[in-house]
Image 1 (cartoon, rainbow, N blue to C red):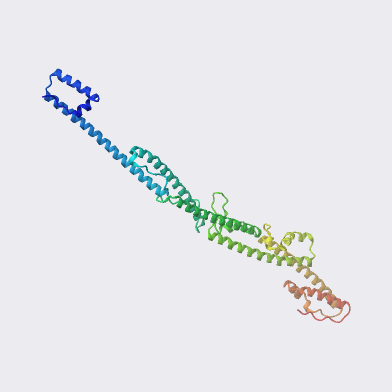
Image 2 (tube, rainbow, N blue to C red):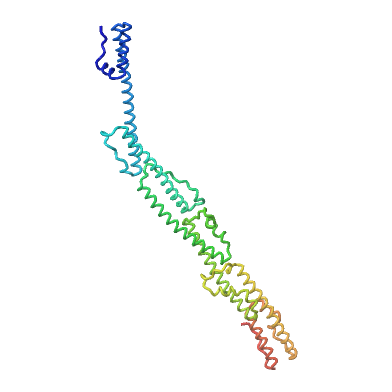
Length: 389
């Protein structure tokens, strides 16, 4: 029987290189004298093998199509999620799939997805930077900030990276930055005032502010000053105490200076003795707020003034005793010539005790002795015995 090959197979074969091979095969069979049955069998095997090749190719193509569908769907889903996360709504518009191949769809969505991923990473970095600054400032405003520069920044919420939320954090940061700036300005103002008062009073500034918070005496640019409420309250309280101490010392020094001026006048002190306190005198007549010279209200200055008062007081006492003793000796001579006993109230023991007590009557005692001597010298009546007033 003649070899039967399907018309479709023959047309397909003859239209390609397979037709030439088939003709070559038929020539070989003719020369060999191959039976029609064997030829038919071989051609059937060839057709079956061709179908298997086609099927494999179709299956491969179908798998590729499915993979492309999945890739496009996956990327479009990622794009949709990223757009929602970033708050973007007009960045990517899908084309009509009926007119666009899968490869074209994939080529269109891939750069959009890559761009969104880059934008997400950039947005996360922005969130991280802003949140880091927020947490750092919050730490500086807290009551227990020892190392404000070492704050663990929280991770950004990757489910909401919208510009709306970013702007909300930015507004929060701006508010905190203004609060920090205002507080820092206030802290620096308070610290400068404490420094000025400590300088005037001769008090250790570093020890004073360290008692409030150690960061207040740190000089490095990298150092973070504590600006919490407790620090501000501590500075305000310290300033109030220092001002009270300043007033107390001014009052004390004015009283001491008054005593000094009285003693200078009484002792007829020289200008050289007075000159060492000339600066103190000029400052004490100034208003409290106008006293800014370093150390002028120090405890050392007060002790120096008190020591001078004590020295002049001792000198005054010594001179008074000398004068009274001299007058007493003159009185004894007069009484001896008049054959009378001098008043016991003018005895050295009595007069020295009166002078040592610091009583103002010692001045009256000198005046009384002078008058008594005058009375005797004028041969007047016996003087009235000295009495304490």
